[in-house]
Length: 292
Image (tube, rainbow, N blue to C red):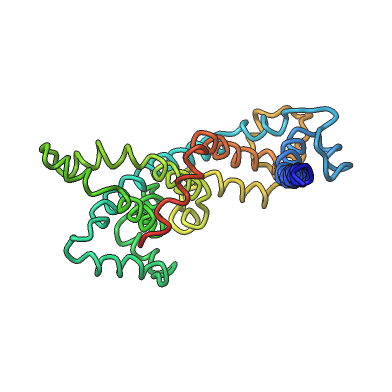
């Protein structure tokens, strides 16, 4: 009987692993296809709509995209908005979640109602535009950072996580002469690395994928990010998006390859961030999801 149980468990493990491998292959296939298409020639992209490895790899599409300052500038703007915006998000969310985690805070219930209310109702696109315009943020990168300085959902989760930290730690620190700021920096934040890493990933992905705010608030093309540049590539892939003066006359640009190369540029950097936060992600994503 024990032998049958071990055999059934062994078969179940094999089936589970095969299913996971299948899902992994299905997940990675589009990335392999994009990479292969970006390295393939125009003829090969035309003859082979779906390919996983080009027969004659070439970096012409990447050289074409980098032949103009538009692509590097858009990439640097996305990196800047992502880094600065995520730092502002984590700082503002932490500074607001920490006092809300104290149940003896005066007006806490009113504040929590106002915060939760924004999860259901929001001003909408037009009121947000008027607020950004009236504050003088139009056509500045600050318009992509300040209006979204605090994410309501992340704020509630972080507040719930802070509530799980034993009160005895804070009381002991106050007996040693620590103020609230020192308690937050030296005790609370080191114990909250899993949650902070998770919210950092959420905020970073959100900033990197920023699209609509750029269309609404930024009219200067020199301040467009990588997502808007990718949109222009998709729309104008049949036309010239590079600097023709720096491209050889016999250089034929495959439109499909240009689009795939631009997608790789816009996808690869944010994928590189995940491995550094992955060990905290599984733990942190469930943090604060139980207590209210």
